Image (cartoon, rainbow, N blue to C red; front, top):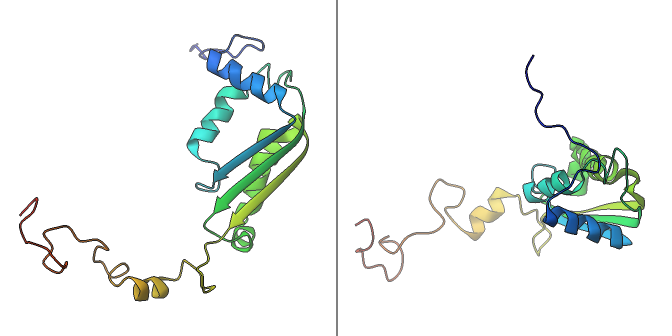
Length: 163
């Protein structure tokens, strides 16, 4: 039989930094999680925070975390909420944060996505034709920035690193 590895014991001691985060959560009436969406989830650093701080014996099995009055999740996304809804991603993101991570640890919770990149004139920022007109070369296989040795760059000497 193989060793199943370390077991999580409710009430076990946690590192000092984790205990400090848990104390902050216990002291707060409202939690706010604000982040950019990465692959339909929070960034890895925030996910790692949940993995370290939401420990057995604190956030679950049994819960000793004091229930917050409200949890607020605000995130930015490159896609609009309508696009995220159409793909099913919005509901998946909402479920992960509000049901899986926050759950009954807060009496009420909200999930708000500020989605979609829009240019000043109302066009979508994802429109390659617009960007090609704004900055020639971006969408045609040429670099959008040229180094100091590029002869097409004004003031280029032709002698630079790599020449």
